[in-house]
Amino acid sequence: MAAYDIPKFPPHEVVAVALNGLEAGKLEVIADSPTAKVKASLSRDPALFYADISAALFG
Image (cartoon, rainbow, N blue to C red):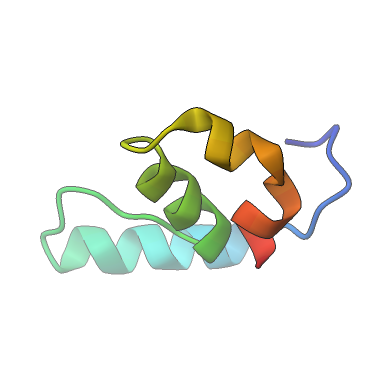
């Protein structure tokens, strides 16, 4: 994602979320809202996601 000019979580925050999830026994940990939105979109029509990526991620 380094090539994309979008807001990114600082690495230490991603690690903290991951360790908290591991400690809580979670099978999956999603560190930020844009990632959660991408995951949620995987079961839908991809055209809806790609039509307006900024809105899909940050809206």
